[in-house]
Structures are given as structure tokens and as C-alpha cells.
Length: 122
Length: 106
Image (cartoon, rainbow over all chains, first blue to last red; front, top):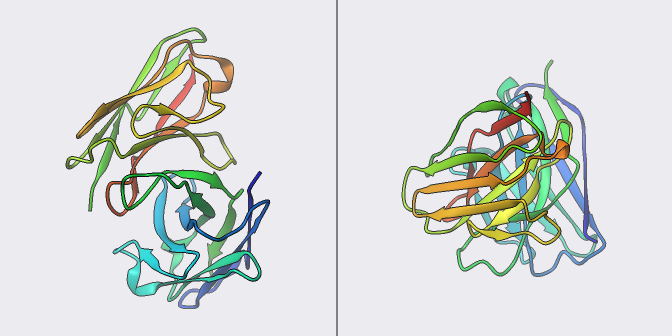
């Protein structure tokens, strides 16, 4: 059973860079797309972007200028960096895995981490 | 960007009720639609994908239908564990989610 676990600072100062890592266990990171999705308190879900195990990425156009994702297959983990954060970036951040087998370029999300709350505040 | 809307935004129901939630896409997304269930403090859980395919392990009382721009999630006989918030998601292009429908106890 694949398990995902987010880690990183829970508090980030405005204008700084948010950095999170997702550790994947119970399966290989290879040959899948790995996503980051966030959810402000009491609000809906926002797709941030995804990275393939080879390193190719797709980002939400609304966040693209501030997002960088990377993958480390040797450690079975992938990471998110979001620069120039503001209070609007305060949210629970989920890492997730897309399922394979979709006829579309994208796919549904089959596995989710438990989520980690990141607060942007001075 | 494809915008997803859901209706209603919330409603109250009783155990045993048949409930239907509607999701609409701002453009044709074929059948590239998923439904998720989220309980407070937990990550979303995939229920249905490709508009009508039940994810493994999900009870048969859940079903999905639709294609193009209009979709529905139906729970045939509401159980206590079904009180939650439900989200639709399109994955035809850059993924986006609906705003959610909260189902609570009447």
C-alpha cells in the first residue's frame, strides 16, 4: 500500500519561500505523476502542479511563476518550492499520486498524504 | 482554465435518503471527471473516476453519471459514514476542483 508523508516548516514568513517534501513509501516513485494540492482552511482544493518521475513538470498557470517542483528517485521523494509567499498561501498542503491508465494527459488522484498545514505569518 | 461548479453547496439529509449532487464544467470535459469524499481533518478519498467508474473498495451505493459538461454523484441510501464534503474534479486539462458540497445530518 502506497503511503505519502509531507514534511517541512509549518510557519513561513511573508516574501520567503515555502519548501515541502513528500516521502513515498510502499511503492516506487518511478513511472507515476506526483502532485501537490492545497486547501485553505474551510475552502476548496487547488491543484498546484505535478512532476513525473523523470522530472517533467506541469504547473497551475495561476502559480507557475512561483512554483518549482523536483524529484529525487534515489530517495523516493519529491518536493515543492513556492516563492514570494503571502498570507493567501496559508493552507493545508497535500502531496498525492495520480493514477495511471487515463486516456487524458492528466488523471484522477488515487493516493493522498495526510496533509501539512503551512501558515504564512511574520 | 476550466471552471467547475457544484450544487447545492450544502444540504441536510437523513440516513437512508437518496441524495444527488450536481457538478458542471465550464466547457466539454468528455468523461474526465472524478468525485472525492472528504471528512474533517482528513485527506480527500477517491470515489469515482471517468465520471462513472467506481474506485475499488468504494461501496456500491455510490454512483456517478454524465459526460460533456454535466455530471451527477448519487448516493442511493445514505449511511452515517457518508456525511462529508464531496468534490468533483476535472482532469481533461490542468486539473481543477469544484467548490464542494457539504452533506450533513438532518
